[in-house]
Image (cartoon, rainbow, N blue to C red; front, side):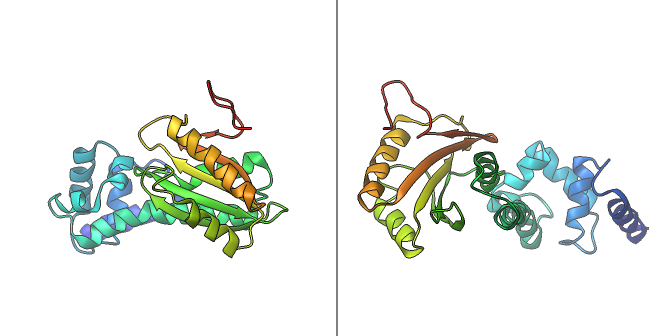
Length: 226
């Protein structure tokens, strides 16, 4: 009976993807591949009841997941892998199929880098002078400021890839896509430093809740980015 139930769920997915699946059923289906011989419906209910939503389960800390009854290392690792795989697939899709010289496409790409992240992350995007992407480098985990994001590291990465244009991006996971005064000050400092080595520091983006704000392209009270 248990085997037949799993096969019915798999058949539903093969026919229509996840359309019509509840959050519990999505998680139950996923956990088939971490827990081969146990009722994953019960575990799925425990997880969603504990965290309140499917997205919250995927954003849970690894150690927190292990505290849920019947959730072991395989299950916790699979849950944590899903958003990382999704981000990597999105990154690969944009890099191989989209023209990032188009500002709208570029901003969608940058937003995708931070999908479902609940911690702060800093990316440096490196381009040649035709806006062809050379690399997207994960620079730092944590808040962005002139101390934690060492300018020397950014410059070394740009020079190593022979970049002509660079863009910095970081997220505000629990905030809004508006730069702090530290963000603006750091951006001004970095623009100056990259100018001295003849590399175009084109933009510094803030991402939050799938919204994106360019610092260089917007004037804020009391600050002039020129």
